[in-house]
Image 1 (cartoon, rainbow, N blue to C red):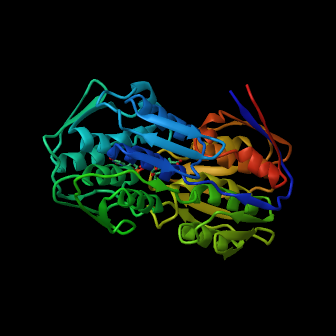
Image 2 (cartoon, helix red, strand yellow; image 1 turned 135 degrees about the vertical axis):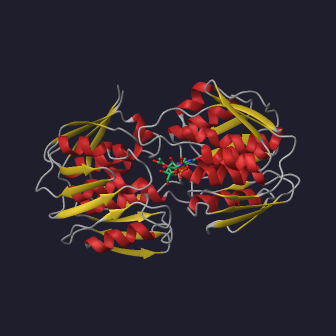
Image 3 (cartoon, rainbow, N blue to C red; image 1 turned 30 degrees about the vertical axis):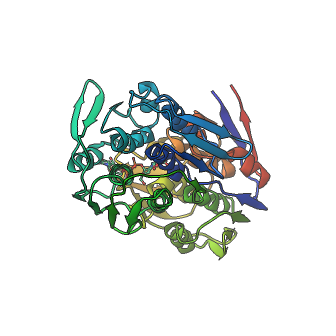
Amino acid sequence: MDKIVVKGGNTLSGEVKISSAKNSVLPIIAASLLSSDKCIINNAPMLEDVFVISDVLRSVSADIDIDNTRNKIVIDTSSICDCEPCGELVRKLRASFLIMGPMISRYGKFKISLPGGCNIGTRPIDLHLKGFNALGADISVGHGYVEAKAKKLVGNNIYLDFPSVGATENIMMAAVMAEGETTIENCAEEPEIVDLSNFLNSMGANIIGAGSDTIRIIGVKELKGTNHIPIYDRIEAGTFMIAAAITKSRFKINGVNEQHLKPIIAKLTEMGVEIKVHGESMIVDGTGDLIPIDIKTMPYPGFPTDMQAQMMGLLCSIKGTSVITETIFENRFMHAVEMKRMGANIKIDGRSAVVEGVKRLTGCQVKSTDLRAGAALVLCGLVADGVTEVTDVYHIDRGYVNIEEKLKNLGANIYRVCG
Ligand code: EPU
């Protein structure tokens, strides 16, 4: 298994380029199943999760060509079947479940393995199933599988108990070709939902309101192929913003959308980080004195849960007390245990973590427990005394394109050991 080795203490400078958003491209790949024409994704991030969902589509006989020198994915689903996708792959990547909505829409029936376990919480799929059911699908769950059957899908009003990103996406995809009109109320408002809606509309769908708490979908007869460039990855950008703050550095980040980064910009600014945005670039200046802050993760436009671990890493090295409350996932503090191995002073009490900044973190071997936890430990390694070895790097590779190369180009003393 690969590990990332970081020798702490370097100041960073220069420029870094952000890739396209993992959490946009995964539902977009799933949405390509809605048309038998070719869909082309340009500037796609070459990530493990993208390769896995592509293999899931291949397991239902889609033809997917990934050109990793040109970051281009061509998806041809003209010869797919309604057969069962490879269960092992589906259990490996939760986002595989996003093919359910498109497959019910296309075939009126579909059977798929239930998603596998997850390190950050139980992550049920009840809201997805409730949505499919409201559109007219009969759902049965048993023996580790979920099966849906529908003579036809018919639009309906669906109220989500929680603004789930995945449920909003899956229901949108099931509803685009349903008969009549569907509304999804209390839906997720994340930028990735807007990107998926734009992708679907460019295929010929009629979706209004993505980005607000109510989405209206007027069913259309069929969808055609399209070309799309996904939005920039706001979580990768946020991770590099914290890299600047934690190392007390100033550098430029290219490939940002200020609107999408508002909650992260607001919190870092409150701490004393100076951020100047010029179009799709920003200069992040973490050279000033920083003060502790409190964070509460919330659905967008609140502070993203996917930035909580990285922010905890930063707060570990800021003098004073900060409180972090995680409201989205019930088990997303596993990185705290690893940070404590590095000398951090963190106390967990249920959904809250009290972080008391320490003078110095100390390098040691730590384990990525999930994708964002791994990135946060790399960030801690950038300022820790001595050498930090981050193991289980496959988690990081799921969602960051060449993180160690990008940090190295900024001046970090970092390398990967393949094993
Ligand atoms: N939930 C339910 N029932 C459902 C669906 C969700 O109770 O049917 C609950 C979950 O258990 C969780 C909360 O709702 O407590 C939020 O889950 P959501 O469905 O919004 O998350 P997701 O769609 O499974 C996506 C991202 C995650 C990100 C969350 C929250 C993708 C592929 N994944 O997951 O990204 O943390 O939204 O913003 O888009 C990551 O990139 O590291 C990552 C975990």
